[in-house]
Image 1 (cartoon, rainbow, N blue to C red):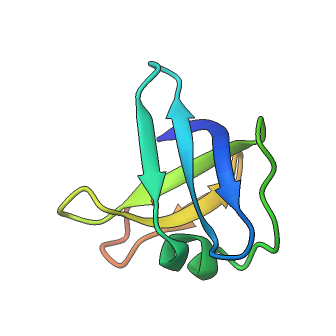
Image 2: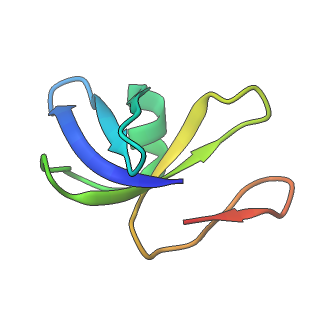
Length: 75
């Protein structure tokens, strides 16, 4: 799932992404911390990886492929 960074709170690492269909999705600080990234900027394209419950567990730079524990890719 891909979208554009809408907000990013650098001190906490949490933020939100607007998906291509216009839906806003919040991501927790843990998903940003798992990414290995140091900063996100509003307007930047990112990919989101969800767990089985739909919770965002990883934020990636758009175009990079992340492999989840089940061997599925998203990016």
